[in-house]
Image (cartoon, rainbow, N blue to C red; front, top):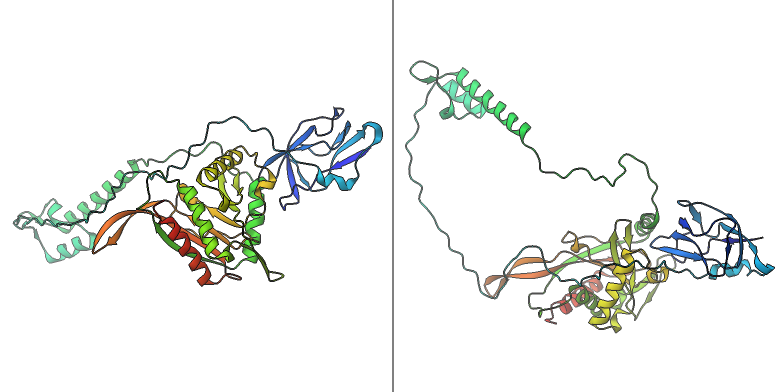
Length: 415
């Protein structure tokens, strides 16, 4: 009998969750036949069989979280020939077959609503209208009654006078105040708020353990909090002069490459324990993608050596594999800098979190139409809000400013 242990999945986490088994005890399997699907920190992958033989025992069931190198399957090996235990770490992992889905549309870069832009100066003209004078309303009330009305916030002109010669009494003021308050409460109690009903896909009040991507997020954010001294800069890039048909995400990635060419120190890894850093020529951009299962961060490789069409094809592929949870573990490793395009959902500025060993992350907010001064007048221009967080242990403020300036300069080019 030979025991197959859960191999190292190569994502830095020492565990994986069993999604489902593809085999059962007593089955005879071939080499490379999928045994089970496991959910790692970022993806769902199939674990193939390293041997041919009969399955004697399955360790664990769907939903169990198994530590790396824990016993997974007991085999009766055909012919008695089995690889050594050391070879198990080299078992290849394959992503499950991708499901068919609709093609992903390219980023249009449009903003909800319509705001005209142009180069014409806006002139403002104020129109003042005279109010017609109205004669004062004569109200009969003693000074003490007037003071009471002021204290209760009652307009004497609205009171029903019951005193002699149509004089308003203190009781009249109190009745008016009580009626106003009752009317306000009645109106508030009968007004129905236009709120959506509670979601039905949430298990309210149930304690649930973190799994998969959320478990990985806990680990990476804890490490970031403990290891990184973060500082964030904010600015905007004016894209009013962009030529038609520009791909916003592709342009942002190109601008990141331009920033890293100007200041390579932000395209780097830093080891705070050893006080060592590694600068990278190749720009591998991690794309933070929000999903219902949590944050998944695939990597766009060698962005500086690709044209716009190649970058767009890679972006579409990343979106597809991320959405289907079929992105390979190797495609989520060794990023040199990160982009968080949170503005596609909401938000103008943020303080994105640097995940070590990286030293920088750029956040892009939602596009805005801002009023900007131009030659003594004003115009409405479209602008991209930018937030760059950097590790201040190894990056100076001046270096980060120059990097951000290079990004803005590239974004503000017409094409």
